[in-house]
Image (cartoon, rainbow, N blue to C red; front, top):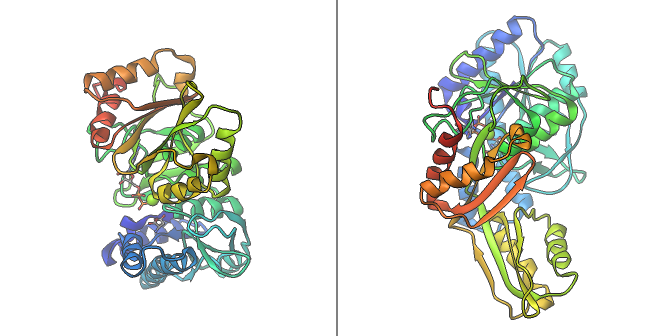
Length: 399
Ligand code: ADP
Ligand code: ASP
Ligand code: MG
C-alpha cells in the first residue's frame, strides 16, 4: 500500500491511513506501506534550499528532501501503534533500496528485502519511506518527483506481492485530470502502455517510472482513494476492449522549447547536438528539423523546463553553434496529448484533435505522434482550455 502526500498531510489523515492499513492487516495480510512526505513538504524543502543556494549541489538536495519521508514514516508507525498494532518504520536504505548515483532522479538497481522480511516475520506492519535510496558510496539519493509510487511498485515486485495499492486524493485514473475537466470519466482499467504514456505526458496520478516497473515485473496496480472506500482503477497488461478510442487527455506544463537557427546543413549535426544532451542525462522529446536551405537548417526540440539552463550550457560547448542564435522558451509552452491504444487502428484521431483545437482558436506550434499518442506543443496559457476541448471532443457527452 502506498499513500501520497495529501493522504498523510495532517494528524487526522495519518490516523485515517493507519485505519486503512490496520484493517488490511486484521484481514490476515502481511502489509508493507510506503508513504510520501506530508502535504507540500517536499516543495517547501526545495524552497528552503533555494533561499540559501539556488544552485545547491544535488547530493545535498537529496539529503534535504529525504527528510520529508522520514517524518511521515515515524508518524504513521506511531498512529498504527496507537490503534493497537505493531509497526516498524524503515528509511529507504534500511528497506534495502540500492540505487545508482544520479542524485535527484536515481534509478533503483536492487532491493535487498531481508530486513522487510524479518519485520514481517515478527508480525510487524512495515512502514517504508518512499522516494529514497542509497547509492554505492552510501550517499542518500532520491528517485525523482513522485518517486514514492516507484518505491511501492518496486517493493511489490521484489516481495511478489499479491497487490500494489496506490492510495491518493482522487478515486482512480480518469480520462483527464478530474480537478480540471468536468466531464472526465473514471476508468475501471487501463493498460500499462497507455498509463505509461499518460504518466509521461503529464498525468500526475502515477509516476511514469512506477508504471514502467509495474509492466516489467507484471505488478497489477490499483489506484484508489484514501478518503473514500471505493473500487479504484486497475493498471495491467491488457484490459477488456471497450469502445473507447482515446483513453486520456493530458497536459505537461513543465516543457521548454529550444530552437537553434541556421546550423550547417551537413551530416552529423543532429548527432552532435543530441549526443551531447544525452551524455548529460537530458531527455529530449519532440524534435523538429527544417528542410535545409542555403546550406543551413533549423533544429527545434523540447525538453523538460527544469533542464533548460543545463541544456543551454551544453549547447554553448559546441563550436559549430558559436554565433548562431539559440532561442529558449521555458515559460510559455505546454504539451497537450491524447493517448489511446485504439487510435492505432483508427484513422482520423489526429484530425479530430486538431479540429477541437481549431474550434477553440488554439494555435499548434509542434506536433509529434506515436502508435498510441498524439502530442501538440501550444501556448501554456491555452493548456487547460485545450485539454478540456480535446477531451470533450472524444468523450461521450452522457457521462
Ligand atoms: P499523491 O500525493 O497521492 O502522490 P498526486 O498529487 O501525485 O498524488 O496525484 C494525484 C493527482 O493527480 C490528483 O489530485 C489529480 O488532480 C491529478 N491527476 C492528473 N491527471 C489525472 C488523471 N488522468 N486521473 C486522475 N488524477 C489525475
Ligand atoms: N515526496 C516526493 C515528492 O513530492 C515523492 C512523492 O510524493 O512521491 O515528489
Ligand atoms: Mg504522486
